[in-house]
Amino acid sequence: MASNLIIRKLLSNKEQGLKNVSNVFRSVSEYGSTCPCHGIRQGLCKGSSSLNNVNNNNKSVSTTTTTSSVTPLIFDMKSSTSSSSSSSIITNTNIINNNNYNNLGRYSSTATVQPDYDYAFEVSAANIRFGKGVTREVGQDLKALNAKYVCVFTDPNLVALGNSSPVWTVCESLKNNGINFVLYDKVCIEPTDHSFKDAIQFVKQHERPFDAFVAVGGGSTMDTAKAANLYTTYPTDNFLEYVNAPIGLGRPIPGPLKPLIAIPTTAGTGSEATGVAVFHLVDMNAKTGISNRKLKPTLGIVDPDNTRTMPRTVAIASGFDQLCHALESFTAIPFNRRSPRPASPSLRPSYQGSNPVADIWALQSLELIHKYLPLAVEDPSNDEARAQVMLGATFAGIGIENAGVHLCHGMSYAVSGMVRDYKPEGYNTDKPMIPHGLSVVLHAPAVFNFTGISNPQRHLHCAKLMGADITNVRDEDSGRVLSDQIRKIMRRLDVPDGLTAVGYNHNDIPALVTGTLPQHRVTKLSPRPVGAEELTKLFEDSMTIY
Image 1 (cartoon, rainbow, N blue to C red):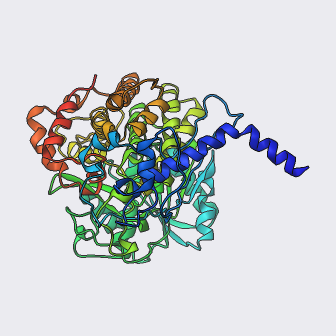
Image 2: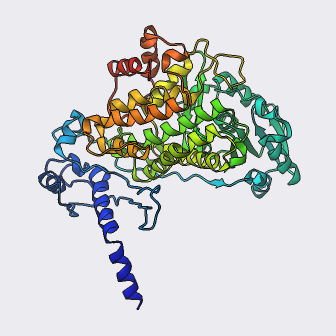
């Protein structure tokens, strides 16, 4: 009887099963197994039988590979009873063929083999608790960690909200659970190395060492707490020691850090799920950061109640940061095209390139942000929309923690660092600044128009999730179609019209290019290689958007 039920179930899912088989082959084609003759991905080997099978007959699916050292991870969350708004989550939609390879020379099957490509990806799991009102649980979490003395980080804007602030909720929870704490409320929005050092010194000056840290705020607060935790746990005379190369020395973090609980009050940075802390290096007038999995918070408490007081412009900027996290991690160079191969597993970067696991988080985030960000911005009382945007931000954070970002973020650092006199509405700041998410998304239309040809099907899949009709769209138009969808949501939410709207002009482009070139950690993940010439064109195309 049970066997009959199983057979009927399999027959009813026949079409979906065939799709899954196709998806398995597609994932192997991009990420898949290695050829025995060169030790590289089969799709790059002229002698690979699986590549020949695809090129000779794209209508047939071969499930035979010469080796299978990597088992692709395929997840399909669409059932036969799902609603029309649901979407099949796939790891790759591109069947490799000669035409796709020859669109970009470095993907050609005749290209010189580079033996130092990486061959593995590593998944870094984030500890996340999501739910309305979960901020009240933080005291119990710290008690369970046996923390007796805690430093709470936040910014003055949240403190000024009084007893309606998430900071108040955190402090009450700590008091109720007998946790002694000290409040540091001088976090700088869009932090600098100077503001990081101020926070580090604040922690150092207390004779009694802190057992744990809590960050209540946006990405700036969470990143500041990460830096304070690092530099007080493993002090160094050279601040640049842990900062990403080539700006810093890029030294690995020697060991585990103290517990850090991150409680975001914005929806976009995803910092509660990442081992990254970003700041502006004043002396070099450049934005850079520290990236190491050990920086990742012990727990991220994601509470939709905490975004109720978020100003409209903050919601827009942080939401577009999330959008670009999802798009960039999904379209980044595949992990097995990244070089150099690390000398040891401990040196494998978290920004390792797109991979099947990170893809899942990126695509789910993209769906949520496209559907709910406009609703949450236009009606802040829409609790469901705000909750879904916040959840999507965490999804995207997990995605970039395991894949990375590329050109939108790489170009944004120079734009944020060289700001002259732009002061955005809704940000209580006495200095010029360009919010991080805004500096990122201003490049998105130009960037994805440029990268589209590297993998048309991936870009078209993103465009479809953002509402585009991709029927009969040519591969060479994939970047334009995705860029058009990005422009639509930017225009709907009144994002400034390009770099000119935030104070830049064409004379600034050489300096912007110079500021972007050192951002190797992210720019090297671009699916198309970029140098000064390509960056110049991208900045030119970003001067105006609409």
